[in-house]
Length: 380
Picture 1 (cartoon, helix red, strand yellow):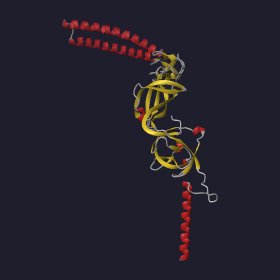
Picture 2 (cartoon, one colour):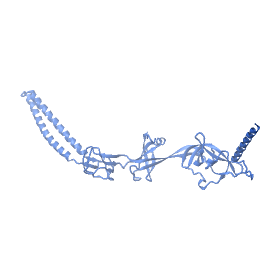
Picture 3 (tube, helix red, strand yellow):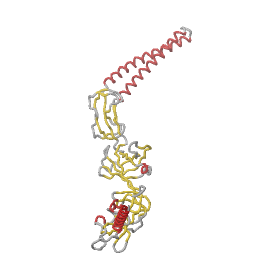
Picture 4 (cartoon, one colour):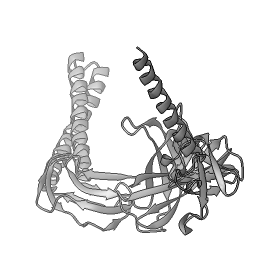
């Protein structure tokens, strides 16, 4: 029993000695057992922090160039294409002829109906004359009322027949006008889908026409950014390595189901650069955010408790030594390798800027001169 108690006591004393040695090594209190000198401290690079009143929150949003109108123009009627006087790349004015159908059958049908209308009109004139005579004879009591009624109804039927033929001619005239395909707006022919001699059905695209005079960009943006924009607000975009000015036309009222972004329509300056339908358009947006804080290198932060971050402040001790103090901070915004934080820091304090994964609170360190690339923290 005594031997067992003695062994237990020896184990406990050994553990206490090891723990004490580790603590002294961390805090710098341990000396080398052979030389009696204080061991060399870990050298860290650190920078003094400067208080900031706020930062510029920036975002980069990408969309596409679209034209105000882009139409696949087609005939309302089917038939054989007689000619297509435009080609891809041609610029046309509103009302310009884009294509024509063969109208020989329609013109022949119209001529037939015109002749029929003349025949019906002559018959109508005759029935009108008979009607007038019948009414005169009926007034003199020469004919029976039935004969007068027959003459009157025959005249009415001839009037209806003439109206029907005239309506058929008007229908032919409408079909003839629709056999000529005209540009609904001024623009540029992007695609010519058919050539002369092809038989097309109604609604088949013949020409794709783009209204190049009014280019737009449709940009998907974060909701809080999009709603901050106002109609008519000037913006600048980058399209095909060129800077293009624009103005906000509208913030659309719905959010994309997948990207959760809100589309913004932006009118572009068509003279700034040659624009193509589908070109990528990049909008860089910035907004000042007023909140006190500090810029730190990303490498100066280590994970903290409850979702926060932490930074190590080097507090001066005796001689050239510094003791590390772990400070909780909140990361508000990141730009590249810099992070804007707020928390338990004061202006002028020295913050370790890298290698924080090797450090523990209370550790004694020496400050090393920072490399030329990290000699100062460049603010955005």
